[in-house]
Amino acid sequence: MKRTLRWFFYAAAALAAVLGLSLLGPFVARGLIGEAIPPAEQAPEGRFEEVRPFVAAGTVRVESRQGRIAVEAWDRPEIRLEAQFEVPRYTRFAFEVDAETGEARVFVQRLERGLFGVARDGETGGGDSVTELILRVPAASRVEIASAAAEIAVDGVEGEVAVDTVAGPVEIAGSPRSAVVETVVSRLHFTGSAGSVTARSVHGPVTIEGTPAAVDVETVSGGVELVLPVDHVASWELRTHGSIETDRAPQPEEVDGEWVVETEAGGDAATVRVVCAVAEIRLRAPGR
Image 1 (cartoon, helix red, strand yellow):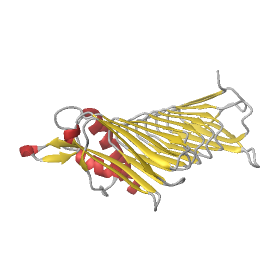
Image 2 (cartoon, rainbow, N blue to C red):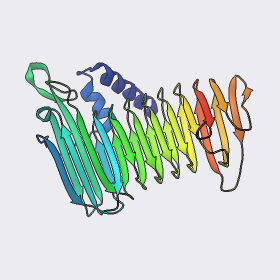
Image 3 (cartoon, one colour):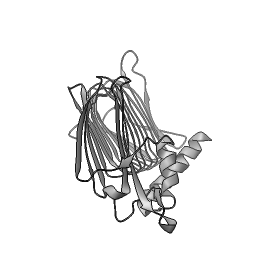
Image 4 (cartoon, rainbow, N blue to C red):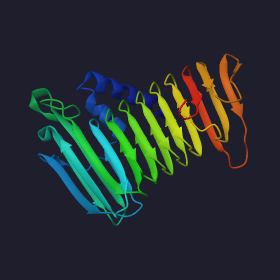
């Protein structure tokens, strides 16, 4: 039941983001990001830049419904935030860092003039409020991002990466301990050698490129492309009612109307599991 409700919120959020349903926006935002909203003030005019001391392996949480979110790793015990708010008047913003507990949070909330001129959270008032957030964090940080339609990019983070979004594209590069992405229609592209990559998508396409130790992907109609070396030793489980295209043995077999590739490598071999309802699965070597 919880999973069903969650997908309902995702679908509603996607509809709100695409169609701009201002009445639905506030409820969807709470369903996606959660009820715990930190104290926030009006976003500053112009470009905001600030550097604060931080621990080497803390947790960084970013919450912004739209715009652009970029997180880059660096080798300093500090966290740096650069932010740009196109319409600060209708934006609430918080940047909280607790170096002792190792927790940092960036929070952006857009406002709108609702009925009778009362401001409410959700869609923007007075134009499209585009927010750009660029963070530099210690490489070993855990990064959590929640959004509805922001363009998201994470580069070089070696800790855990978790992204919960609806419609914005997601790019993850590097060697995180793990990468987990849940989305409805977002395009996901992972490049690197993570300990594990997990993706759950309804309609969004998924591309995984590199040599991750474990891959676990589930989609409904979003196509999946695996760009892995030919000598990548792994236990394979590929299943779909759509189609499977692969450049290596074994070739897919049809079992009860479903195309299947299944092998067991054993030992310390990587594991690759991709299960789709009706999507195409493509497995190829780099450059092909």
